[in-house]
Image 1: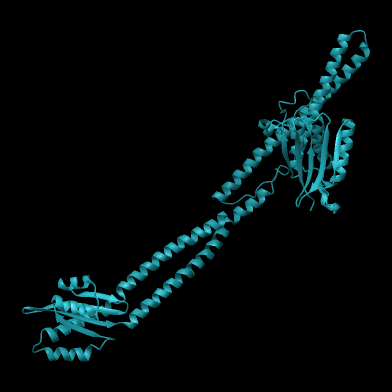
Image 2: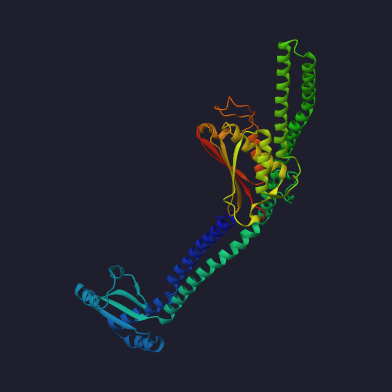
Length: 454
């Protein structure tokens, strides 16, 4: 769930909570005060009925006249007057069930109220001489009850409508709020090692978004400086050191020629100097390739590459390096559509990466059979290199792509620990990856996954 959606739901939930509390508040007080006037009309009738039936006297006729002229009959109005003893109450309660609290209020001398749906009751205790009487008036209030039901429907409908509106408003609000962040994300996704010189747009203001933009740009400044420093150091060091090494190698070769066979010990020393100079030059060449395959401030020259032709070129290169190899090429997994094996990339770099991996397979398998296959998936071109060599110890597998790392079982083989890191850098430069399956003393399988041309 995105932050935008999460905030929208949170906004809707908070709005629903506030609206439900407000609706409950309105409903409670409407329910409490909507029938206050009707109850008072019932209580007036209770008092007049008591004057007429409990306290008959000279004014009885006047109370009847007031009752008849000024107090119109309520819908379903009914009056009950009975002696306030247990038997009378039980008889009335059998006819109309009223709660115990209603009678408790009456016995305390106060006016009691009770409502059952749309039927309202008001009652009071009156004493005349030695006898006590209970007067209860009941009636219906169709208008007030209908208004309360209508209010209930309005509140429920308003609640759901408000939730929907809150969700819509919250969605628009969150989209508006996070629009600058989405712009920053889109811009940041377009920045990679190939264009570290780009920066996020400056956001005006002193809010958090402006601070994020500024912080990210400062981080890019540091990264660009670090990449350039590392790249320049390796490149310059490789170039500057190559010249004296070439001189040393040339002077050693000239000294060997002049020394002839007169001094075997001198010949041996000169050969050692020449071999070590060549070895150091090979290391520097690998370092330079490693630097050039990484960040160099500009994109390499890309072209459309037929990977099947690339495989044959790799085989031809290794035949020159190692004529005793037993590379077995397998194209049985290729589809009929030849365009599906097209790759967009730098031919020299891709050839260097694949050659390094295949050459390692030949070397560390003592020139046993190496299967070099090519297949295609929905999104990737897969180059598989499977050997029958010494394999890689399981606990060292995670380090094989670290520069200058060599597995513990490779001591009898010449190497510098730069070939695989260089290959991985090149593959990553082409948005690809390398997968390894290995069993020590049984062999290793490397699968190079490269995105197909679109």
